[in-house]
Structure formats: structure tokens, C-alpha cells
Image (cartoon, rainbow, N blue to C red; front, side):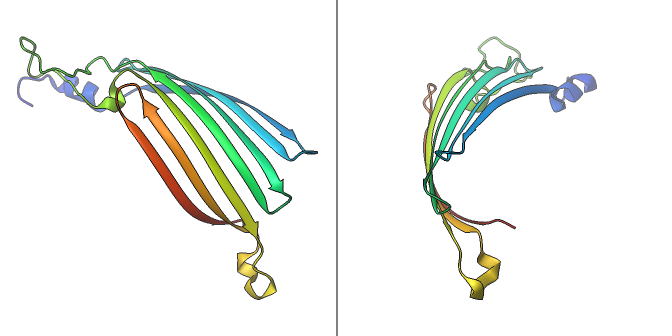
Length: 159
């Protein structure tokens, strides 16, 4: 871009990020219940600071055949220093700016669930032993207007 110092362009193309995460996991073998609680702190040099807390519970309903999983995730972040939802009336038209909602300040909640069925295809199909089918659902919502519902169907195999 004309009029920009090459060092300014370099600064716009690099980004320093740091993320720190901790988790606590608990298994209760007698009931085949598993819990995972985690926290993540994120900071970068464009002004975003974020906090994410997550809790997931997994319960085996039928031993070695079926489990249910429920989860909740809370996320909050500040906006990048160049985020705006307005065109600057008297600002520098060459200055960096974005209206990308991923770089805005927001609070988000996600609720999720899954059902997984484990199966053994038998001796004829040895390659399919320890396979599973999984149905998942998640509802994600931000206070800036974004909301998403996701449904998934998956197949997996342990090797």
C-alpha cells in the first residue's frame, strides 16, 4: 500500500500470541463416569485478551457399547485495537481496521451433547473391530448476534 512504511506492513503481517491452558480430569471407574474441566487464557499483541472455561461429562450407559457426553463452554474476549463497526469519518483511511466479528469483543456460550455407540463387526470384518458411530449436536451463541447449530454424524475406528 502506498504511503505505508515497510515496517508498518511487516507489523501487520506478524502476530505474537500466547495461550496458557490447564485442566482437571476425574474418572470414577465404578460408575464409568468421566469429567474434564479446563481453563484457557489467551493474549496477543493486537489487543485481544480471552478467557475460556469448559466442562465435559461422559457417562457410559451400556458397558463398552454406549456412552453419552454433555458439555458446556464459556468464552469471553476483548476486541482487537483496530476493530470497528463504523467507517472512520475523520480517521486515517490507510489505518488498519476490520469489522470481522471474530476480532470484536464478545461473550459466547456453547452447549453440546453426543451419543456414541461402539460395535464389533465380528471375525469376518477384523478391520472394523473397535469401531463406533457417533451423533453430535452443539449450539453456539455470541452476544454480538452470531449463533450456530451444528449436527454431526461420525464414524471412527481405534487402531
